[in-house]
Image (cartoon, rainbow, N blue to C red; front, side):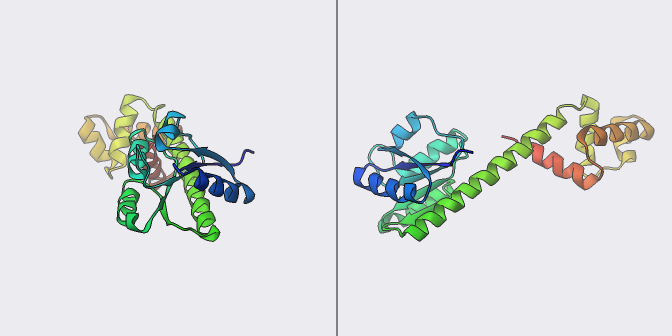
Length: 202
């Protein structure tokens, strides 16, 4: 199993070398980038995390976060900031960055932030996979079964659905049974959960 890759972004080569050494000694795989633009041109990865300086020429940390969000990237971003950049770093977190570190940062704080970012990335990928699986199951339904599903998850009874769709309650019960069977669920709460997960598919 490959180690998660930490992408370091800083226009100061000395900082890149120092951080890279600290992380590699701790056992992480590291890739370095001298600018946010260079990182984006390399193609943002699907896994790992990004540890980026906030104030860089060409593209700042918040602009990097905005670019990643625009590309629907789920890679967690940690920003390193000077004291005067903290309000802007908070703004970046509101835009999607997962954390920010004030310089100078201790090994303990650095490693804790990266571990948390990697865990968040794994959890998000797992949630994405669950959502994709749920969406795939919904794709197996016929148009009529999908109509019945959409009404079931908002709390309509079989009789109410029958009136809305102008078909018999017995036919609705048949569709309901098929929906439950195809989706592999046994209860209405399970059906609602699966429907919600599918709606969040990337």
